[in-house]
Figure 1: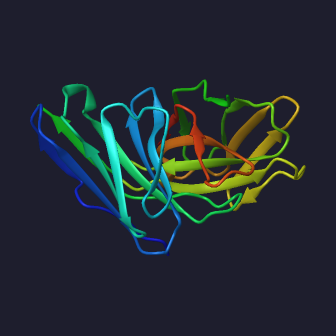
Figure 2: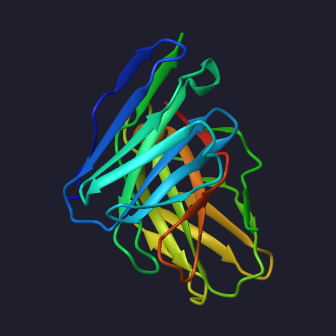
Figure 3: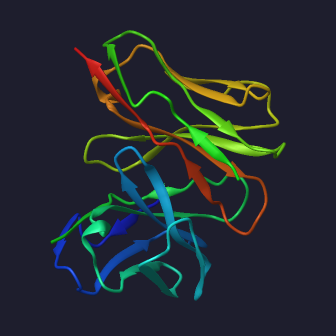
Length: 113
Length: 116
């Protein structure tokens, strides 16, 4: 089975801090994704990556950046955390190819105080 | 741009009964993939069922089946013999054909509560 591991289930940070969310997958997937999940808004794509060192903006990239130095690891960075970034963050990975489903991690519930 | 709409924010069903969750989408493409994902409380999101647009036959996975109406751009999920473990948030999602990645567009979700 595919395993997507997010480094923290719960995280509390302060406004202005630089925050790192880590995601690791163990199935050699080419594609990795970061989503933000908010009530009534569903999942919104922040950034995705289709190869090492490659990244593309999703629908809501403002205030975020990403890093993919190794194929198995995809990091989401909040450059200067703000209270409106309090949310659930989900990481996913998939193989390349039409119809390949995404596999999700457990999520990180991030609170910015 | 593609959009996915789930018009039922919350639903409730009695154990052992059947429930249908609605999903509509908007696209100008002719070939695409549709998915239903399930997110149990405080647990990982998992794939429930998927349907390829060019296949007319509705997909089925045990107690889960879909009613895919391509002309109406409708993709509903039917859960038969509902179980307590089916309590979860359900998301409908759309994937375009082609491209370098498998980007998904999600609906806003339907929270299903199965009552004993």
